[in-house]
Image (cartoon, rainbow, N blue to C red; front, side):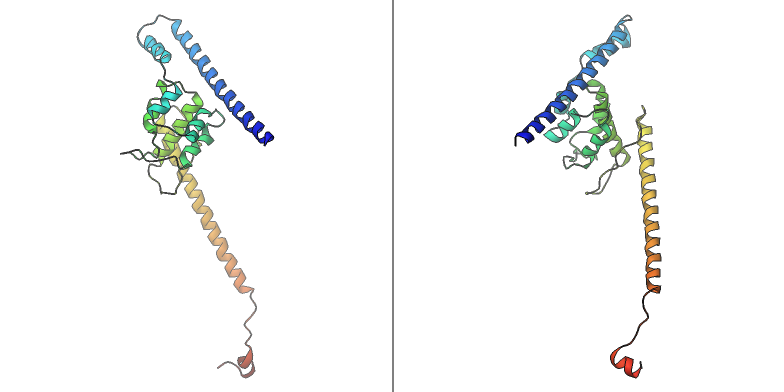
Amino acid sequence: MEAARKTANNAKAAAARVERAAKARAAVTRAVAISKLTAAPLTGRRAALIGQMETKKSLEQFFKNFQLTGASPTNVLKKTTKETSITNASKFLSKSMLIPVRGTVYPNKLNWERAVNSLDQYDLTNAQKNLIRRVNIAIAAKPKKGRFEIRPLVKVPLSGNRSKNIAAQVNAIKKQKEAEEQAARQQNNANRRSRRTGGSTQPAFKPTGSVATYGMF
């Protein structure tokens, strides 16, 4: 019991360190960007950008505004790093926490399309933004699915153009389906060859009993 408790505490401490590091990196990134912007006169778009950066909403506010609740989804998003943004996106696509949004085809109470359009308003790391983008692209590339079907994970590299990302995912799904169909055809052909081979090697029929004694009529 003591060993298990220590392991759990170490895991929590490690997660906390990852979260603090991500927030620290985000803070440094903002500070550098602001310093570059303030190096020139604060006029027009530059002043607007600085004002926007200084008033970004927190991750907790993001959860509240998009009604994202529960330990599983919130912790997944909180702990997402550059190395885990792809695999963590799959958790949002496969878990039962995904429920319909009224009047939309999006499978979560979080409206992913609106979330993507609002990313710059929140203090999120690039990894967290990429997770949200990947879920949105996966949904947009396959808007409808069966009840027990899981949407394919977006593994294609993300570009700055959402339409291109969706097209790349649609193409990846098409290629995967073609590969699966080809594999199924090859398996069916192999099964047919196996059945033919098995039939030719079976022993010849030998009648028994009265048929063997008196012949077949």
